[in-house]
Image (tube, rainbow, N blue to C red; front, side, top):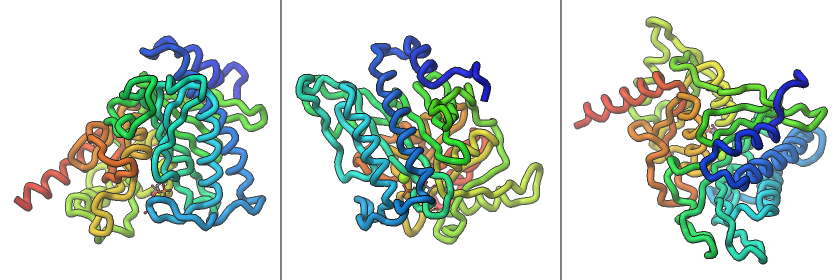
Length: 339
Ligand code: AHM
Ligand code: MG
């Protein structure tokens, strides 16, 4: 990696003034995410060497097995975000309800809430496949000086001030947006710094990759089945290539670079899909739109959905704009046919 490249720390400071609430608090918050990402990265990379992999024995609020690294990543992000007087509340996939943060001298003066999936795709850890962290940042809507409330977390995705992910892959990258495009930074593990390696990331308008767990095909709605058949037809630039890692962050990251679509639709087994609106779909949708892509539940823009619950699930279709448009068209036609 060239020495001239800008570090993430430099980039955050340089771009601070372009952010509409440029008090430096968001910069400090992003810096704490950067720090936690490095700590978690160190642990994820050790996973094959030490006895840290495997289920911790607990189950989380969704009834899923928790891996030890999930617990570790959750603790590290919460600890790091709590230390600076910026965040008033954190919601995490690994916590049943949100955490209120109040440093004694500050008396609920912190302005930001963070929603986080500390280690997404954690079923992949045991088999040395990429996992990720996803984060979403809002300004609180309840008055400063009072404890954070559920409504501060249940904001539409369109209200996000920043969002991003860390992918712990063949190299570790932090990719984020503050509403002014998407930039990707690669960790140089020898130095411990992230460098700007992927400036102004954009989804190609069209792509040739589709990412979906086709094992669930029989349970999918007709519109999704028809779209999958469309992807497999031998017409024009099709059939497309199927690529599914089963780690949202990694599938999204590849599709953003190469052009593609990710689908986790509703099914007869999971009528609302699997992925969580607040800390998986909304941040990815914000990144997608900032990268000229698109994110939908099949009918509605993800970031326009009004959340009702912290751990709400939603069908998720995300990627290159023309591909998502096409999937929505199939959904619309199948519904019209039923009427
Ligand atoms: P998790 O938060 O429990 O890790 O679940 C989310 C993950 C996504 O990263 C991934 O795309 C999806 O679940 C895979 O689900 P499935 O194994 O049902 O295909
Ligand atoms: Mg997850």
